[in-house]
Length: 362
Image (tube, rainbow, N blue to C red):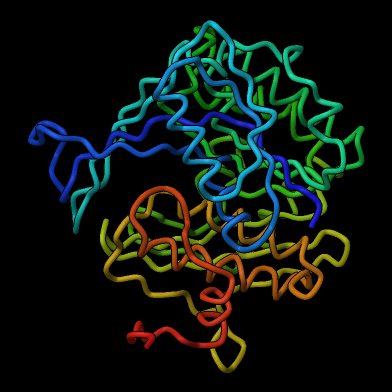
């Protein structure tokens, strides 16, 4: 498999243990995470090849971050180590039942936020690669990071790569231009990168917040999604950006912090067709019922990683199969603590085949 390149920020994840609130705990569990890094980790854990590009400072915590990437087989040879900039952090308290999870970001002036696009050797980065994955999180960090994201997309297309982007709207981060609100800044910035993108990944809120496209009779707070509206949402994305050949929309019905229903749609522009997963025995959409979530952070990234891996793996690349794989992969991620999905391809394919009981494998 030719490498998939992932460009973005990886941070220290500081999580309150045992469902404690941040104001309660005297200890924090430290791991390392970021949307694009989580995608790269999924691809490697499924047996693929991923190349990660970022900028990290020169100290021991950054070395630990590198170790976490290398530990799952990610190629870190293109990670820059500038003398300036810090390691971004985020603090997490995991919700339960009716109490939602909460994230506090501490990412200002991180190394990737202040590293210019010209510092990266894009020709070398994309040499031999087949795909670039981006997210809407890294360009939210700073104007500099936004430019680097767009330049990465341009360079990838020039090198003949497919490009995907997960819109990933984060209201708390989009504040580097005081003249614009978070949504306005996100839309303006993302519209500069989307002309270079082949696959757009989003959820119903991202489409509205970043592109102003609404999914009709949908209430994510009430846990009710009108799935019949999503093909039209995808068509509107393609109408805005005719270069986009596929649109994937994750379908999360949130009944509580501990109970979500999970599925997705993949729209193919060339055939004007929409695929949904998972399906019941009659071929109708029927979401996974995830009633005891261990950690939902990284669930969307594991979907993106699963979809990219499947689309670049010949025996999984048929759109309906690729979507089924991605949804099963992300379903399993909800049972795993931390941002990375440590599920294997065999485990994902077992769930695709109906092995959903959770019985002990002996």
